[in-house]
Each structure stands twice: as structure tokens, then as C-alpha cells.
Image (tube, rainbow, N blue to C red; front, side):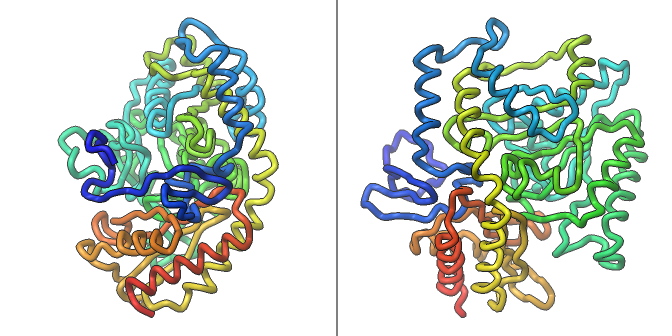
Length: 437
């Protein structure tokens, strides 16, 4: 590895990847790895899909770049027209960017611009404790993941945070599981009321919590109750589908599981499946028209990119055949994880939906006490899994902002039943290697 690369894993020599196919990657020594997490739950269509590569090459050969204020493009028009009917947003308008953090930045600015366009000076964004929405400053401010915020706290502090639907560690145990959805909604209502409804622009949350809290699926009543509170106060609802969108949970978008129609939706990751840096901010026609009349002071160099649109459209074509298979394959993964891991003394919870699954590790199953952070349990297991030829994603700090260990599964949607079982078995082997039987 070149010394000139600012590595994301300083002090460690990373193997050089040379090719990928389906749900497998191969390094320079010819060793294969099952891609159990699609990188950072990015790759949905699998590696080595030549029709996507060909679409990117064809558009780049025709026109590689134009600025979004100078030209539109046939590629972008065609992509938007094909994507729009799949979006759970009324009369959707699509603002393409380069990734999830940019999409979140666009969404929170858009919420502010909408209220200004209506003559209201609303500026506060409410998110959830333990959440993650990106690493740019605005996205990090709305994120509730303490460990990521800590070095930059002098720059943060404009957002407010409410309770997350973290069922394994429900903040309302006295009414769990039947009444906690109402409590979450009541808590959000109190936060909005305390700030002042005329100050709150939007509430942002993932329909299913992704990496930060590990595939937490909310109770059925949660989203209808939350949406009702937002509507009552004129607060825009932003659904962060960066990780859950484009089929990951078994529906095109996770919002669909609860009939949720957000005012703004953000997506990325699976949108171009890692073949191109692509993020999307989608708003309703009403929001678009209000902002268009008053003006939207915003923009990125690589927004509305024609090659990105070509990549997204090609990926969309592949996903049409894959999304209907996700529920069954996700069920296979969930059953395999329970079969391999449910009796292990350090496995506290196995949860998720579709092909987004998580394993929460604990020091004591009875008390749900986490391992102390200095033990670096998740990191040790990730390394052991890699030795076994399995790539996983991990997160930490889920219990109290500091302690807690999660293993996240989000394989390409092309994963086979045999590969799913193999992933669960290799994960179990890695846990045994680190923590014993």
C-alpha cells in the first residue's frame, strides 16, 4: 500500500482487492471473501455487473460532465421518470447529489427554505438519540451518535434529539412492548412544544435504524404516531433511507412497511450500488413549488451529474428483478443467524428486516450489560471474520454513546441461500474464536 494514501485504517496493511463477482470479492493473493455487508451496506446488485459499467462508460463517452445550472440531460430525465413511480413521496421531485451526507445536507436546507418560502422562520431540526445521518457538519449535527460527534462538538449543537425505537433497550420498559410507540410520539410532541412549534422545521429519522443502532425495526404503531405529531405541528418529516432504500428491507423503500409518506426522503448507497457516488434528495411537489418560487440557495459541483444518472438508471433496471427476492432471502439470513448464534452467551439480540440484519453482543445476556469499549469486541470479531473469509460491518457505542458492540449484515441482494448460511456460520466461528463457545 502506498505511503501517500491517507488510509482509513492507519497502521494496518490492507489487502489489495482485484475483482468481485456477485457477493464475493477477491484479493491480490486470490483469496475470496463473502461480502456479508456490501461494504458499508452499499452494494445491492452485486459486484461485476457489466451492464451498469457499460451504461457508465457510454454516458461518459458522450458527455462526462456538465454543470447543473447550464444543462439538463436526457440521462437524468429518463432516470427521474423511471424512479418517480417507485418513491413513497407525493408528486416527487428528485435532486441528485454525490452521496448520503450531501443528500441529508440538501434535505435539511430544503426544509428551512420551504418554511422561509411560506413566511415562517423555522430553523430547528429534531432527530433521534443514537442516530447517524452523515459526516458533513450539518448531517453530523442532526446525528445522535455521540462518539462521532465528540471531536467536533464546538461546531455542533443546533439540533435537538428525541428517543429512538430501540426495542432491545426500550426507554419505556413500563409500557413495553404495547405502549412504547405512543410514548415515543408523546416525547417528540413534548420536545417540539418545548422548543416552540413555530421554530421546528423538520424531524429526520431512518424508518429502520441502520448501522448506528443496528437494524432496529420500530413497533407497528410507531411511524403512524410520529407522523401524526409532525403533521399536527406543521413539522416536515424527513425519512433517511440512505441505508434502507432501494430494496434493502424487502420493499423498494422501508417507508412502505408502514404506509409512511414523508415530505422529504433521502437515499444513496443502493441507488448506484457503489458503481458511482450517487445520493438523492426527494421532496413533494408542494415543497418543490414553494421553494422554486422563493429560491433555493444551495448546490454542489457534482449534483445532477449525467453519468451518475446513467449509473442509477442501470442499477434500477437490475434491482427490478432483485427486490422481489429480498424478503425470502432476508428470512433465510435471519433463520441462519438464529440457528448459529441464538444460544451463544454473548449474543444478546438478533434483529432486522429483509437483508438488513444485526447481532448485538453483550457481556451478560440477563442484564444486557455491554462489553466495555476498551475491549474492542466488535473490532476483534470483524478481524476474525475477515480471517474466515467473511466481510462484515460493525458499529459501537449503541448502548450509551460509548459502550456497545454491533455486527451488521447487509449483503448484496444477489446473495444465494447457500451463501447466506455460510455467512452465518463464518460469523459464528469468528465469535467463538474471540469469545469462546
